[in-house]
Figure 1 (spheres, one colour):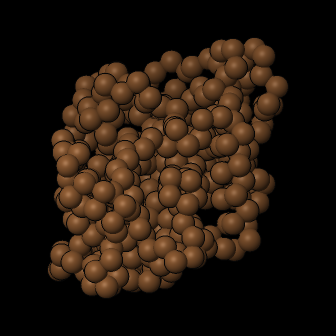
Figure 2 (tube, one colour):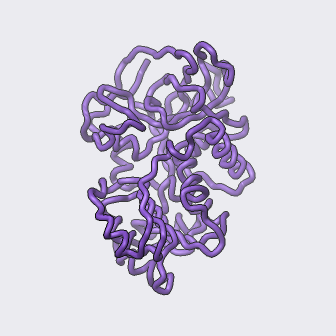
Length: 340
């Protein structure tokens, strides 16, 4: 089969299309014929070696990247009863989706409703569940809360804005351009700060009469972490849930005290979807909101599998304005074309 391979840690040039053996499902696993693979910053972290030592998301070259995908069940391994061949499924947090086929533990699979398009279902896997746990579990937003969401026009940011507003929160975002500010406001953001033009921390403090945000969702990392601490409410929560600008490095616990006895966490999505039941609950909620017309899912661009490098370059260049996908075999789900 065809798959993108990373032969050594490094830049996007390390991504190459290769012929590799088709995997076979083992006990408790299913073979998925991939329709779409999602492109996420976690793929970049794995590619460049930032996550090389992690036990939660193990990776060691050579390997096929990609931590989410959708497709159909092609075959099942021994003992599998939860899915059957032909089921439409999605999954996240299993490395290897940049390929025509992937073997996935069945407990990580969630079924995709027939009326949810597969590209939309892909966007609701890793990014959707991340936005869901951040707003519903890590800091359960409610009426009266103010949150700051960095990268508000990105795929996860747009979903988080909408979920935060549904829970009654006041939403402030940072964005890199007027165009992205307009996108964030269309999704419901109350304020969009152009971080290149002003000090975003000062702007947040101005907007909150000096009180600060109850929670900051910081997916940028190195470039924003100090400002995120600065504009946090006393005893507020700072979630460093991404490193788009690079890892933050060491953080002195006294900095948390000086910022107002605040709480700091660096979460993994895996800790918030630890079982099949929790995965199903989050995905079902996201599907329901989408089908009810309450959640807009923006697909920024869809590229062929072979263009994984271009997808990574666009993401690292902060060009994305929504979800980025690699199309692997989407013809399977187009009723105007024959099943192949």
